[in-house]
Amino acid sequence: MAKVTELRINGKRLAVEAEGETSLLTVLRDQLDLTGTKYGCGEGQCGACTVLINGNPRRSCLTPVSAAEKKEITTIEGLATGGYLHRVQQAFLDEEALQCGYCTSGMIMTAVALLRTHPQPSDEEIARFMEGNLCRCGTYPRIVAAVRRAAERQRKSG
Image (cartoon, rainbow, N blue to C red; front, side, top):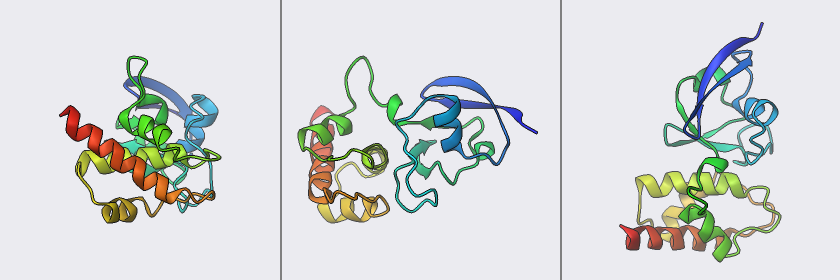
């Protein structure tokens, strides 16, 4: 039987009705129409479904909605503010670090988490942190360049 669960998504408190073991991804996409978070492999291996929970990257396809209750959840839709893209989103555009775009939201969310904890990573550290996110188009060099650019912008803006 479904129960009402309180979620905090992108700064808003929302009540959803779902079984506790329903994936957060299913709730985001099917109930809340937050479709920027993608269904990829459904097994937590590709990273397309990555969201931030309390600032940490998590695979929403593997996260039961009950485990996300009353925690701060950020999706790709929650990054832009005041009509401006987040610096990581803008860097991905500037570096043309997307081709089909399917992996992009997960890549961006993972990069945001990296730069929050390690604001000046080396290219090797970027590659290592991002290695759980798969890009079928193979834009990895551009993805690393985008994360590096976002880190530089972050450093310059203080």
